Length: 358
Image (tube, rainbow, N blue to C red):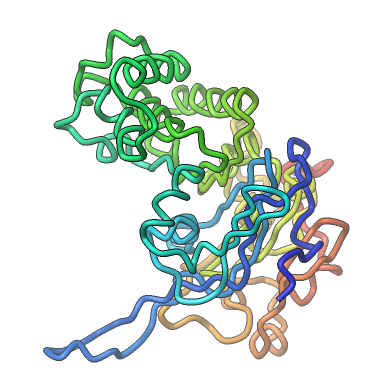
């Protein structure tokens, strides 16, 4: 298997050009069981043959509707959810490759110092019985990084860096707002000096004004600490603001991957274009005047997906033949722009930033 497929490695503007994490043919399937004996009667293909690379210093946005498998993909990278098949290779150094799926629990625990996660819900992701100091210092204690006064100093430094006063470290999570709680979660993720942070819907539970503050904080931390992000989200406007490249998922499969500006200007997959058409317009005079296709129907069932292209029942360009019978491969349809659509080269789809598009 070629772990350095050049079509998957187009770097974002903030990236160093070196691959930090390589994902190939990742699958996460969950059995459906029934009856007293729990006999397997089916399979939910939450993630089905997904491949991409994350380059050092970049932010890769992973987007799609609810149930598309994006959160499961992020969790599978850390083996919070065990993958069914595929490979996840971490490159801590240019000449060192680590097969994360082959690691035992002890080795994996050590590696999780380098790869951390910021969870979606700031209200349930923090232990209500722990103080802020205990929450932020927990990774430091678990990995034997710091103790005593050094531990307290490090907690104080982390709190300052995420915009919280060190005097708050004796308080409990209930004393903080949602945005402040998410800052605590970010401080906890940064405690071990990670290289890669998986942000799982990190701002979706916050008010819009607070979302902007957290996004700006994440950008500043990336610049200061040289962080790399996998930013999982469903809000296209949020992803556009923070991401260098964007990967679009639909029913467990990757359907498009490109530089952010290119993807938003010239989408190559009908599903991506339909997602962009659903973005609310702040100008009321433009409402109802969009010439772009409105997405109809519901997301396909990952336990019983359609044949061929999973998107074909909802696609206005479905030809009734190839789209139904043959699953399209994710391929390069323009320099650095990948799409899984039989007719990607022919379609002229409107993007958010397309000239004259409304």
